[in-house]
Length: 175
Image (tube, rainbow, N blue to C red):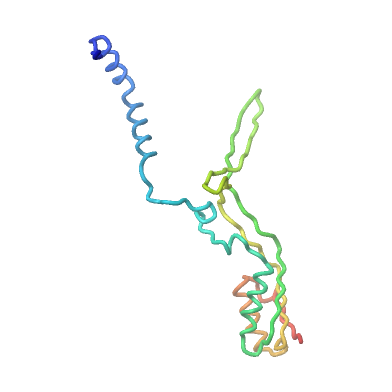
């Protein structure tokens, strides 16, 4: 049994297509964009999309002190160096949020939710930016701390690496 279009049915279909042609074009374009290949085989986690490496994600003041002490110990005349850093504020992660406002009975209510994306590993919050701690001061203790030239080089190195002013860095002689 073969289906044949009758003239009234054909006119209804054509009328529908003519009436909703722009809606159908937009829907077809959206479907085409959804199916368009992106060229990425695997998706990166949100932290990597934001340009953050694993070392930046897991920032630790103790680890920075150790790295700084190792680097400063290589300075001629300094000897074995130990470093203590104090921080003014801790690490802060700024996450993407979605804010909705609703007005009911003359009152404006605001809701704020953290934006979460689904990945192969599960759900992750979208990281907008990451603020590192602000340093308050530094103490450097080393056997060569009584030599003015060594003290100057150590102070300049710590200042360059931490962003602290030289007035907030103390170099002392130690054993």
